[in-house]
Length: 495
Image (cartoon, rainbow, N blue to C red):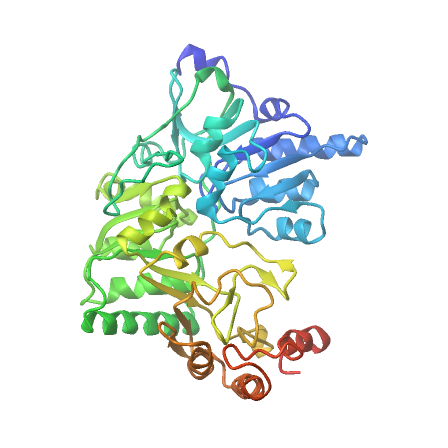
């Protein structure tokens, strides 16, 4: 290491001691990839001791999206996370938010970096990032995610680097760092286009600490897709084939795949289908399912904001990055580029995201349980749903052993309006809502997507509304939340 950098090497505890009470920390990390792993636990330990001494120690915590327990979990359990944005999925953070201990700003992922740069929320004072290399002149090479990291490094007064050698050089050169001008365009015309640099340039004087680590992203593999996930995947792929036969869907449009079993089932089924043409991804999160497509030699390129591989997946990628040239198949971008509405619309992306619940008129709740309790956040689903060529919202028709219906008369919280949703899919079937007025949408959703146990109740609500309400969107407010009220009162939407 260059002497100018070696002089800044210190322990995680020494680096954590540089973090002030009230600090606004912008960290690397996006969906469990590329997040700090040793300084944040040291900070949590320090904060716990200070609080025990009567000091009201706390920090604000900005990320790209969800991050690992070594960052989100430890800080939430220590009780020092005062504010969090723009997305989270950790149970301890969620509980802290819902108890009112942590203030949470749930944001569209493509919007967050620009809003931070423009000062609509307080700007980070410190950037804490996972990097695979740093040079004396201030070039920082990131690990498994782009996220909001370039913006945090650009804005923060001070920088702490966790120099992580786990990936070796297998991610160096994969990144494409581009921060758009306020009124500038993003000149990406195919998923693999590179328009920036493979590093983030900073003033080296801002680097106050370097902590050497060799640690993987602590990501567990998703369970194998279950019957419901496979059924949903089959409906989607059958529909896409139908659209191609109709001449309404080009073969060369890229895919955005959300997080989870259903998304993995779709990509896995594509890989196994001998008739499937090679595919490109323009997405947020690249998961282990990408290996099925790589091994079937059906991947053109995968562009995203992070490579969120399981521990086994990280080993597989590193083993093949050079030997099979897998490294050349990936482009990692800042999330304001991976989720950029201009690019999503230009490329004609096919989007697949998950709903917590959907109502019969086409609105989707992605974030809240019973209207008030946050689950995770909107993430990038809105970025893609509003701007994609084809948009799917996927959900099993019931949860909790049938006690909860994912299809309800009116969602308890609206993240995506009827104007932004196109196609609903459950294990029961697929409802193409394009070109349908509200009552026709409702009938189709009930017929195709609702579980048989709930179809009569949903049809009864629709019939009552048609009889007693205005006939554009026949909601009746005295009955609209009966499903949710029954769930709260009896533990089941069936009553």
